Length: 194
Image 1 (cartoon, one colour):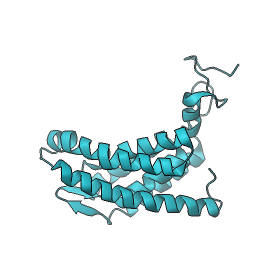
Image 2 (tube, helix red, strand yellow):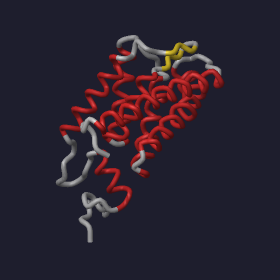
Image 3 (cartoon, one colour):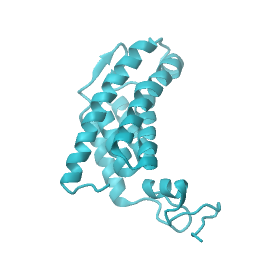
Image 4 (cartoon, one colour):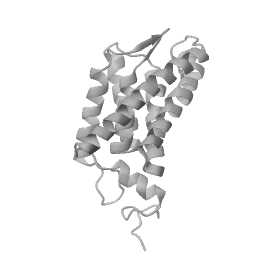
């Protein structure tokens, strides 16, 4: 019988989706390690990369679409798991907004895609699934959340849904493709192993 945490779920033996999620994320409960320093370092590097590449964007009205963020989302989702991927996307969005390089649309645009990419990879162990998760999460769900919630509620602006769907989809498809190519190169160089 696998070891159980205080909540009764298996924690470190790799059985079950919840245990796999916790292992992939580097988050454990009880006496287990809370964060892996190598994963934290990778998350910081990926956040810095997303911010450093922020000058490359696609303007759509008040929105700015960042293909580099979607590349980073795929890298973080596959290399670090869904929790770190969302943290990287959120941290990059906060920093870009503080520096005046982004908008509030960066939060749903990046974080939803990162979450779905991480969950898709976690469930399938296929990098292409992470790419599909990123495209659906950002291109569809992120655009919907941006147009229906973030823009009207927090920015007090109306954003045309079709424009956001097109812009977010183009941005995420390009960034996702670059991310998948980068993962392949990192695997061949021995930096990352699936």
